[in-house]
Image (tube, rainbow, N blue to C red; front, side):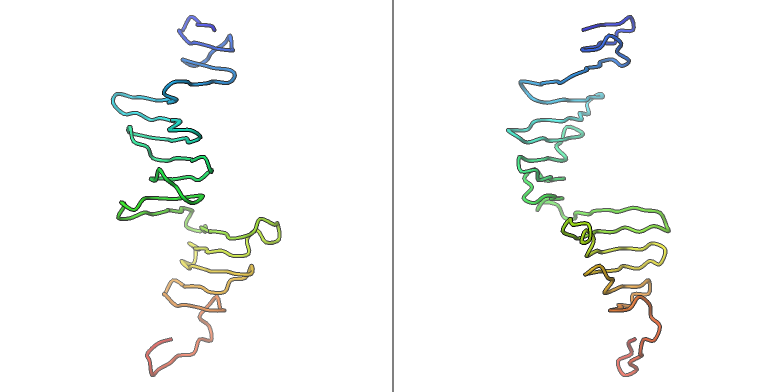
Length: 167
């Protein structure tokens, strides 16, 4: 261990460039909690129980990875690979952001390179449309006017049903 003239502490290093530099593995025993505090707020990483890793801010657990690898955001008992929110929440949201000319996509596939993206839900910001695909092909679209297009990507050649007042 070394304490330099600036008061920086180095463990496993002779040239610490921060308040504390540890070069090598670290074991925390006892409370198994690594906390970062600024006044009364506490941000932490905590081994909440055997094989569970919890992350928190403002002294409250916000995310957990359980022993099965399930991740809970706002949920400390995730039952799926990703669980967001809990039954006590009135609203849970996931937000995807991209540029005004970009797109946000959720892909469905089996991991094989040819089938990695055989299904998807895509929102294209440049056309303000939502597309749905299966078998690697777009099958349905909701355009910016709210038209539901099945097997088409545009409204050209759509018949008008004048009796029902719908297109």
